Image (tube, rainbow, N blue to C red; front, side, top):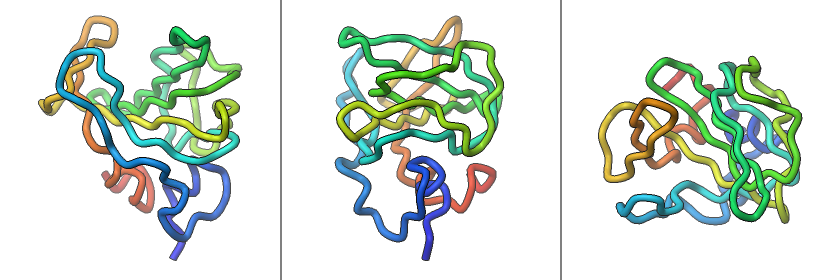
Length: 142
């Protein structure tokens, strides 16, 4: 069986979870790294939406945040290069950029409270384990 959402993220058919390097990790303290590490050379959007944040981390790698509903967003991190800027529309399958050393970190956040709060612009979101997102047939199933 093809795992469609995960396939969309890495840009090729995925039939098992072998592309997941490390499952959801993090600690509840503020500023901790959370997310799921995924093996890929390039990263593609799993949804349509709008880029609401593009920033470089302390290592010069990009994190791209795509809001696909008023209360939900996906963040793709460990990206070496991208052509996207805040405010740009993004569509399912758009190449967001090149992964750093063959992996990206994928994060999922909503307004539903969890142990992992994060402030983005003027709102507080909460990160959640993205496993169900990655195993969905499409982001509309969430």
